[in-house]
Amino acid sequence: MIKLCGFALSNYYNKVKFVLLEHGIEFEEVFVEPSQDEAVLAHSPLGKVPYLQTEHGDLCESQCIVEYLAARFPDRQIFSADPWEAAKERELITFVDVHLELTVRNLYKEAFFGGTVSDATKGRVEKLLAHHIAGFRRIAKFAPYLRGERFSVADAAGYVSLPLVGMATQAVYGRDFLLDAGLDWKSYVKAINSRPAAQRVTEDRKAYIAASRPA
Ligand SMILES: N[C@@H](CCC(=O)N[C@@H](CS)C(=O)NCC(=O)O)C(=O)O
Image (cartoon, rainbow, N blue to C red):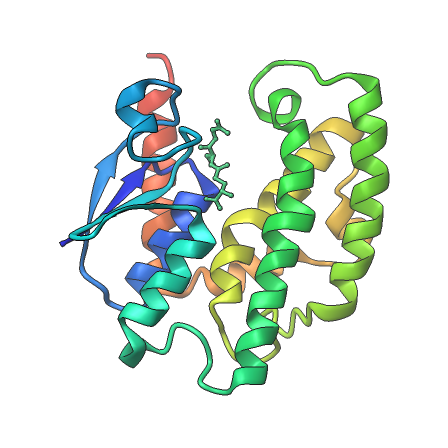
C-alpha cells in the first residue's frame, strides 16, 4: 500500500493527504518530521516532507506526488478530464505553491515559531507578495472555489496554504495581505470545510498541535 510520510502540521503533506482522501485512494500515514539525518535524506533528498513510499521506491515534492497519483489512478479523475481545465488547475496550484506559499514561507520563523526575520527579508517579501497576490487575483475566482463553482484539485493546495499567507502577513506586517487584496480566504476555507477530506486533514492538524503543546 502507498505510504504517505510526513506530519500533520505540514501544508504540503496535507495537500497530498487531502487528494488521497478526496479520491478514496488507500494509503497509510507514516509519521516523519523534516530532518537532515541520513535516515530521512535516504528517502527525501532535501530532508523535506512529504514523500511517498511505493512499491517502486520513494517520491518527494507534493506536486510530483499528485501528478503520479493522477497517472496511477486515472479513474479517480484527480485533474479535470478536459485538458484546458486541467492545465488551469495546474496553473492555480503553481501560483499557490510557488508564488504565494514559497514566498511567504520566509516569514514563518517570526510569524509562527517565535523567531525573528530581518527587515531586509520583510521588505523583499512584502514587495514580492504584493506582485504575486495581484497576479493570483487575476486568475483565482473564489466563486466559491479557485476555478469557480466546481471544487478542483487546485483547492487542495489552496485549502492548506492560503490560510498561511493570510496569517503570516497578519502576524508580521499587522495586515492580512490576502484580505486586503479582497481575497476572502476565510469564506473560501469555510466552503471547503464541508468536505469530509478537509475535515479529516484539519482535525488531524489540530490534534497534532494539541499533542505538541507543552503540558
Ligand atoms: N516543494 C516541496 C515543499 C515541501 C516542504 O517545504 N515541506 C516542509 C514542511 S511543510 C519541510 O519539509 N521543511 C523542512 C525543510 O525545508 O528543510 C513540496 O511541495 O513538497
